[in-house]
Length: 407
Image (cartoon, rainbow, N blue to C red; front, side, top):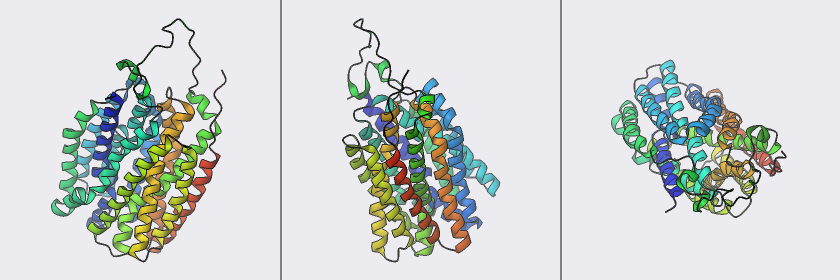
């Protein structure tokens, strides 16, 4: 089997770890921390903002490290840092220690997470890039599906402190060995992207063709770089708020138990998995940009359904529409940039783009949390999220493919 698929599998395993223990589990931690400490939704949402802010600030440095030292070393450092962060998190007793521990966890999650894994998969695939990215992201989605029988069950049975410390141990014992699979360059193993045998371009004495890959400077001068970044930021504005606040909304506004609310979230991630498989297949055969455009409209409809939900049918419609849109759009974000700007400087390009994207991931949970603290419910906040999703569709409509760089 082409080694690139082993890298996809390793990436899925790493995202499963992060999704089950932290990313998708944080909404459940919000409920138990609010119950134990009485902290406001704004304080608890701020932790998510800290995580995203760290990712945005550190993104350019991480992109440079990926292009210089490779993904395996970066991911290994991330696993160790994430494990330490979980162990510190198990000992928190104030907002200051909470934010400090969460910052350490965030740094580790970033180093072993999305940018590192996406950068690696992009180097190994071109023709089947959307499919490869989609399959890799299934790991994080599956973490959400099994959330009620993993983290939530542990939170209720053993308490959040024991669960957090055990999560750190699991990251060390399971996560570190997985990082050994990652490789930066298919050519070093005798392959070209998608599994073809690697043949040096000047082997037959022919002159080297000029590269059509963009440098970081060239990408920054392309309008599509900024439109994609803004569209991606709008998407994470929605997804980040749902990940942090949906369980609380169902638990407190609609009267769902913590286990039942987590079960709804599991159904969202199940639809995400289905949408991811469909999006990966479609993205390799149709316009990734227009697929993202349509998915943002679906996000807007889904948020309105969640905001005004009064029946299980409306919640179910939100689950199907939002989860499917999230899954179909997700693989296109990195694949679209790689298609437009190439593989050579992908790490640095994604690192700078993350500085824009992360603004949405920070603002979404904070806005929803602030509106809840001000009004006592999530309705106005979720309606605003729907409006931002509609605006995001316009950004993707404007993100036409740039012309090759002129040198």
